[in-house]
Structure formats: structure tokens, C-alpha cells
Image (cartoon, rainbow, N blue to C red; front, side, top):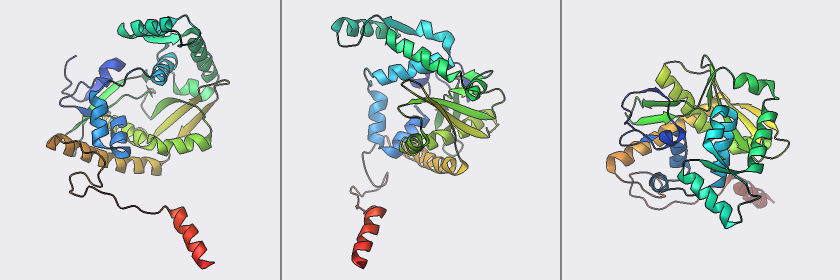
Length: 287
């Protein structure tokens, strides 16, 4: 595939997008989250090493195809006629499918994905959100402050681009569980990254970013979450920090591990008690 040298919206396959067609490399939302939550050494290792077989990744990719690009589902999936993956014959068949660029799925997994899609389309808000727009477009731009290449692949862009939608499957779609997952998994960074990226490429900033969350098991419950402005702003600040880390690492060709500050000499952390422990200590002292 040719190297991308101009900002814009491109029709790429999922594989082409994740292969990163920019030189020397570009930063995605997941990469920005990893630089903040982990360290550059982990980021660059994962970039340069195969992640191997990941059944959760297979199911997630197939789920997105079923919901967002159903016309591509049959040509992207290989059905393995087995009850489970315990037998060597089924695992060998899965390996052959992957060699052909296909996603190996058990029949019952496909049935589950179809049932989940049926349940999702029973929601009027889901039908409205995921109809009449564009799914899985790849957008590339150069960050104005640093010049580094960045990229996004929004799950769905409705006609007019006034809001962006991201479809996620989860063990629980409840407000309590997914509310915690937003900040644990850096979804507020993702929201800010996508809104800013879309604006950088098109010149128009979407008004909102939504998560459509569906549980992985029957009855495949669905919940909708509109990201609030403060969470997005916090995510934007973290993204600017990630971009700064990425730029430093590229310029110095160094990818440090866990250090207090990138580029500084200090190699250790000072511990600090959590707020709840301080409160307990102060209460005990008062007594």
C-alpha cells in the first residue's frame, strides 16, 4: 500500500489502517491512550510485535462487521463447524482461515452475533444513529503543533457529521459499570481524539460523541452514552501530553519504560498515599 502523504479521508481496509500507512509512523487514539496509561516501551513493543491469536479481538471485529458493515460479513468470516475450540482439528481450521485473511468463528458465535444485531436494531435510537452515514472511514492529518501524523477510524459518521458514534460490546452496559470503564479504558481520550481529528480533516467539528454499548450475552441489552464536555476536555489534555511524548520519542529514537518524566534523569517514583487512606489516618488520629 502507498504511503499517505496528504491529510484526508481514505477508504482503507481494517488491516491497511492498522498497518499504519504513514512515515515514520502515525499516532492513533489507542496509541495515545497507551502512552498515557502505560509507557513508550510498551507502546513500541506492541507496535513491532504480533499480538498473536486473540479470540476477543476476533469476536469484536466480527461484531463490528455484523452491525456496521453487514455486506462484508460473509466474505470476511470462515465458519468452523465445531462445538468449541478444544479439538486440534478446529484450531487447525482456524489457523488456515487466518492465513487466508478470514476471521474464524464457530457457528454458535455467528448465531450470537446475529441475535445481538437483531436486538440492537430494535432500538429506535440505534437505527437512527447507524443509518444513512459512513462506517469505518479512515482519516489522517498532521498535528498542527508538532507536525506528527495522526489517524482515526470512526465506527460511524452520520450524514452531516454533527456527531460521531462508537459501537462497543461489553460484559455490562450498565451506567455504573460502563461509567467506570470510560475512565479506566481511556474512552474520554478516544472521544476527544476523534472529535479533534474529524475537525482537523474536514474543518467541521462534530457537536457530540456517543458510545453505543451492547452486552455480549443474552438478552444483549443496549445503552447509549453521550460524552460530557468536561470529560472530553480532560481527554484532550491527556492527548496533548501523549502527542508530546510521541514526538520526543520519535526525535530521540528512544522509547523509555516507566519513568516519572520523559527525557528527565530521575528513574524512580515517590509513593503517595491515596486520599481514602489519608482520611482514615486523620480520623484515627482525631479519635
